[in-house]
Length: 299
Image (cartoon, rainbow, N blue to C red; front, side):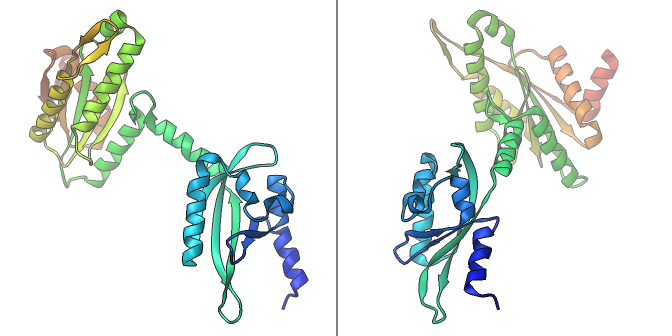
């Protein structure tokens, strides 16, 4: 058995940041690792002093999780930003558990923390790569990835349709009204698309003024109905600018996909076929063979 001094040495030298609180829920111990991280003295952290280092945007949530679980004597886990000795805030994973004496009498909580900044920042970078910042919709790459995954899972078991939405005369809008207004158009159209598809559908910004929607378990007829709903929603938009407002329209191409192998080709071919054959403010439906044939004949 280890002696008390040995246990204390182990806790002090532990790579994790360790804290303890008493029956009043106030902290009465922090190990050397915690103090080295914060750059503060034990006396400064005692009681509620440690909360001074918690980021102001995380403090209320952090205290609620801690105090609610303390009252219930239940283990908890939370993440928050804590100020490091160099003045920078770093993300901390904090796990707390109640502890008891030999007679099962509740004595307080003990907690262990680790720095997870790299993990959190990696998640943020991943999310940034997945989301188109302007339109707050999936990026092209991420939308295509999700569609491929859906195709793989439903192979030979269901229909998946693809929709390409192109804002008509977008260049004129940009030339006439400028970038701020054209960006407003993109955001409004993106919102109209997302508001008129199902939760299971996969939306993304494809390129410039084009959007892509993958429609799982959907044949071309049902997909055309969804596309028509989107077309009407876009048509009803009013875009305001300094001298009034105007409307926009969209041309939409629909194609049912039967094979993941053709996904890249079909996206390109439906898009090109739509550009060649669109009548503005309309929905055009192709089957996979028609879409391929259209581009084969024209090439």
